[in-house]
Image (cartoon, rainbow, N blue to C red; front, top):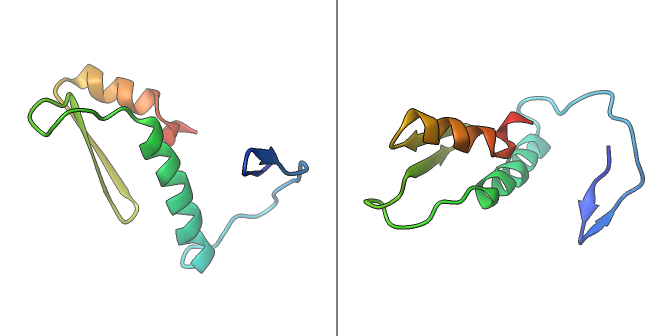
Length: 82
């Protein structure tokens, strides 16, 4: 694994354990990943013209689309599957 900071990558390192639930670092890492996901999703227009809506609260993410295909495409084209 590598970490990208200011367009530079760290040396490769191996992860052996994760962050425990409730650890202060857990919320920070979730926020960083969530920001990346939300930035990569194209949500344009206003609430009446958008084809999809993304609702995020705490650790829940809801994708609302006008069609099932839009929801599937949004999920498959996001970082949420990784």
